[in-house]
Amino acid sequence: MKLMIYDDKCIGCGQCKSVCIRDNIEIDEVAYETGSNCFECGHCMAICPTGAITLKIFKGRESRIVDYNSKESPLSYDDLLEFLKRRRSVRWFKKKKVDKNTFNKIFEGAYYSPSAQNEQDVEFVVLDKRLNDFMKHVYDIIKVEEEEFFRIKQLGEYLKDSSTRKYHPLLWQGQQLILTFSTDKTSAVIANTRMELLAYSLGLGGFYSLFILKADEIDHDKLMEFFPQIDKNKHMYSSFIIGYPKKTFKRTVPHKEINVKYM
Image (cartoon, rainbow, N blue to C red; front, side):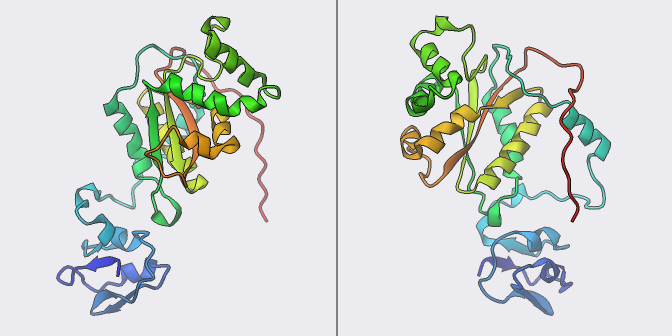
């Protein structure tokens, strides 16, 4: 059994049963769990009008529960769309670094992010002091493709002698890097997207590096040697360089039209 149902609070309204996609809840004056079919999505807990249900895995973390008015949106469509319009990749950063308190605010977005079967197995690594060591480790892995990708070759030259280029070939002016690890790619991408949007709301900016992700694609085991504290079954699915923008933009840039089919 994965639920704690408090009989003294339950009013037998059946709301929990109505949202349970696993048919794990029945009502007999009060709600009760039928078996072990629960996959801990938390819908029953979120819809109960009296707070009579708690997932056992969340026991002791009740302070993280937030009540809200489900009939009112805290953000309008127009406001959110305007915010999305202003999002741009940023490669030019101030020397000021992001502090730990600000990072913690950003990761709140990942905390409230959905994941496959509510497993929430996404982990993050913030690289700062060891960023240069990590980039050397990445190059040792991805250098097998430097004849195919000139940017990788530039990285090797830069690591040997930084005077060969004005900016780092992969980080540009970035000084901090957030890596996202998970066993499920979709969960990692969703969490990172939410985190990124919160970062922009705090006046930060950044960009994603696909070249850094190549390290996981080429030799996952060697990459994970740098992260002995991370479960080796998890893959690095996102690499986001972050910082305070030095440049600000004044208008949107046209995009290619999206292709939507209704079938």
